[in-house]
Image (cartoon, rainbow, N blue to C red; front, side):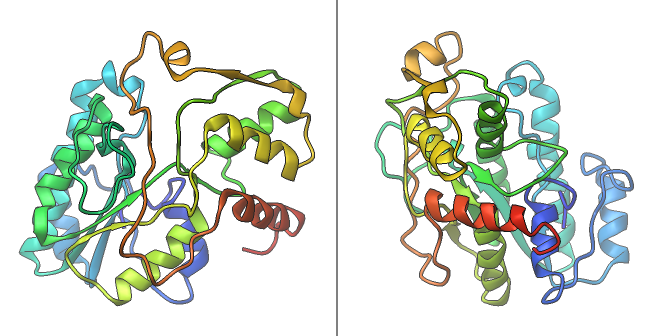
Length: 278
C-alpha cells in the first residue's frame, strides 16, 4: 500500500488489519517519483495486490506546484504501476470525483471524465496510465472520526463551529460526502473479488455544503446560527478549478451499503464517545 499513513490509508489499516496483511510503501523509505527505488521495493516484497493511495491532494496549491503535483500523481503512479505489472500482480488505483467537470450530473462509473483543475487533470492522467489493466476506485469528499494530521471537510466544519466561528457555506452546489469506514469495508470486498474495472465508492446521498454544515451542527448539537449561505460563484470567484455539481453515484456497488451523511455522523459520534474502539 502506498499512502498508508494518510487520511484514508491509515483508517483502512486500522479497520482491516485482522483480515488483510499490509506492506506499507512508506514515503520515508521509497520515493515513488524515483523509478529505481520503486522497482527495488516491489521486487523485494511479495504481495497479491498493490493499493495505490499516495497522491498530491492539495487542490488549490496544485495550481502553483504543477510540476510536483504531476510528478507525484502521474510519474509516481506510472512508476508503481509498471513495477507491479512487471511482477504480474494486481493494482488498485484510488481516484476522485474531481475527474468530472460537473456539467452533466449525476456521474456514474461509465460517465466520461473531463477534469477542470490541475489536481483533477493529474488524477485523470493517473487513471489513463493504469487504463484497463487495473481497478480504478473513485471516492468523494472522504471523512472520518479523527485524524490529527489533516482535517477533512466534516471535521473542519465541526471544529470551526465548536470554536464559535461563523461559516459561509455554498448553497447552490452539490457534493457527495463519503464515510471512510465504508470505503475501507468496500475495498476489502473489492480486494477479495478483484476485477480490472471502475468502481465508485461514494456516500449514499448528495448535499449542498450548506446542508452538510447544518446536519453536522444538528448531530453534534452545535450552533446553527453560525452557518450562513453563499453561492459557488461568490465563494470561488477567483478560483475556477472545481466542478460545480459533484453528484457522483454508483451503478456497481451492490456489495456494501454506503452510509448517508447523517448515518456517518452518528457513527462518528459513537466512535468519539468510545475512542478505544475502531
